[in-house]
Structures are given as C-alpha cells and as structure tokens.
Length: 159
Length: 159
Length: 159
Image (cartoon, chains in turn orange, red, blue):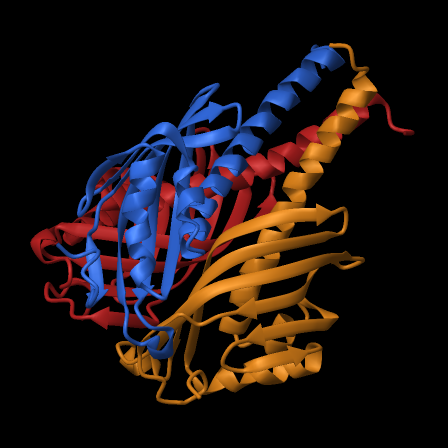
C-alpha cells in the first residue's frame, strides 16, 4: 500500500458514510409508510422539510407541514391503511442532497371486520431529499397512480 | 484529526458492525419468506429461538420450534406459497437485541395449473430478535391481517 | 489488539467491500424494474452480460442483448408497466460471482385512462451475477409465475 494509514481511514470513513446515508434515507422512506399507517399524520408531515412538497396525481400538490398533514388525515375514514414501498433506488447527488425512485402497493380497508372489502392502488414514486440538522428530510415527492384494484367506497382516492 | 488511528479504527468497526447486523437481520427476514415458500417448514421454525413465539391474528400464538413448524406445515395443501415482505425497519436496541417492523403481501395458490385462482392477504409485522451463538434469531413475531383478495378455498387462513 | 493497524484496515476494507457489492447488486435489481417500466428495453437488456440468459416460464429462454431486448419490447403495448421486486437475498459466492433470490409483483395496464383494468402476476426469481469491468451484470435470470389477477387483454403474458 502506498497510502498512509490516515489516508486509508479517511477513505473508509467516506465509503461508510455513503452506506449510512443510504440506510438513513431508507429509514425515512420506511417511516413514510409506518407513520400514516399508524394514523400519525403529523409525524408523516414532519418527514418533509418545512417547505416540502407532496405531489400526487389525484390530489395535486400540497406544500408545507400543515397542508400535507391535512391532506393525509383525510385517510382516517379507513380502519386500515397499509403502504408497501419497494425498490428504493437512492442517489447521493451531493454531500447534503439525494434523490430516490421507488414504487408503492397501497391498500385501504374501510372496515377491519370485512378485510376482503378494500381498495388497492399503486405506482412509481420520485423523491428528493436534503440533509438538515435533524437528519435527512423529504424536499419533494411525486406519486403517479398506474393501477388499482377494488372499489374506493369512501371516495378519497378516486375523483 | 485528534483521535489516534486505533481510536478511529474502533469507531469504524462499530459503525460497520451496525450495518452488518442490520444486513444479517434482513437476511433472516428474507429466509422467513424463502423457507416456507420452499416448503421447508422445519427450517422456517429454526429462524426462531427455541422459545420463540409466532403470533398471527387468525391462528393465535404458537411457541417453540415444534408448534411453529406444525402450524405452518398446514400451508402445504397449496401448490404455491409466495411471501413478499417489505419495509424492514430495524432498530438495534442493545448489543444483542433488536426489533423490526415490516409488511407482507402473501399469496397462496391451490393449483399451479390455475394460477389465476388464488388467495392473497397481508398486513403489518412486528418482530423482536436476539443474537445467539448461531446468529440473529426471531424471539417474537406478530402479524395482523388487514386486507385480503380472492377466496381461500382450502380454509387455512379464513376461520 | 494484537493486529497491526494495517491488518485491521485491510479487514475493514474487505467487510465494507462486501456491503458495497450487495448494495451494487441491489441497484442492478432496482434498475431491472426501473428501466423496463420506463420503456428502456435496450437499457434493460444491458443489465445482462453479452451472453446473459433471461428465462421466464411463459416465454422460454432468451440469450443475449438483442433477444432479451426484443422479447421485453413486446410489453410496449401496455401504457404502464410496474415491477415491484422484494426480498433480494444476495450471496457473494466468489470475488467476482454472486447469486440472488427475489420475488416480484408485476402489473401491466393497457390504458392509463382506466387504471382499474389491469393484469398482475408474480412469482419467485433466481439470478446469478458476474462482476465485469462495467460493474455487476446479470448472467442468468429465471422467473416462475405462481399467481395472477385480472385479465391480460393483450395476451403477452398468457399463452
């Protein structure tokens, strides 16, 4: 080896940091599923930056914690919400910025006594992130709806 | 840098160990899907500790390898089993303990000659883990069923 | 510690490299979903080695970039394609070879104006990989179809 131990350690630190950053962003996206499914819509909104934008084909764009929380809280008419997000393909674009593609399979169930009556839909996500003093936050999110199954009896996701 | 190379190396080792532990637990959860889908119910049960508890709304609680294997082996009436588990959100709670949340999309197909006749359901998982001399093992697991599609003609998952 | 700093650093490098290799292979599998869903069938084929083999129960085996691209391009009759791949269980089998198991939930939608009319299916994947000068590439892939929902009005996935 021609590098000094200190140089080698610095190189390892940078590589480890990149893996940790991706792991942290995956955790943000997991919480993006967990919090609304636990009806914690305020916690969901706080995954975004203060000026964060949530965009969804059916709903349009919501900007800021208050608007995002309010839009999502409409989902509380269902007794169950379940987000499955997959294929989080994360790019670390700069030291404090990142972006990701992902996909979702989402199901809402009006009554848990009738789990067979539900509405599922999904599509591809695009996210951008910034690193803040409180960790990685979502700056922008956009979801397209490309398939659905069942009937949305509550009319929240079908215009 | 004010730290010595040895201190820096120890810090890197601890951070790397945390990433490796999460990777190992993700592998346990992947095997949690792969083994039953390969009809290896004994291998599935051995993902749990000897006193491990498998809890599922519809079936109640099973404790220990023998009870867990027996309960799952009931699924062999189907010609295909397919578990898709997503959003493994893992917390390393202590040096040898961990917990995780996850979600599942699960489908059973009675006859592979008729793949269009199947029963799918899913919901959220909670897991706890302990590190043993044989690696990470599941101590407790709980699954709720919050949606279903199709008909369970074999009556294994519908009471 | 009885190891020298250089020995410790080399051990950390090897462990970090293993995590990075798995991360790179996960990214190949994410692109395996993203590229066809973006109708980039040439880019999809280039995830395979020049002599790579794509095997799918319904279609048989295709070998090489041209044959793989041509087979997949048949999917362009749908207005939307969405692959959700989960449970990527990756084994680093040698310094430049790897294998993986995974599962897929796949949905095609003929018309985006009618997202409720679609055909979904899925099953288990097996992959092998080799490390090339251009990074990890798929050498072989095999998919079985074990469930389906809806009707494939275009007849691409149903014989």
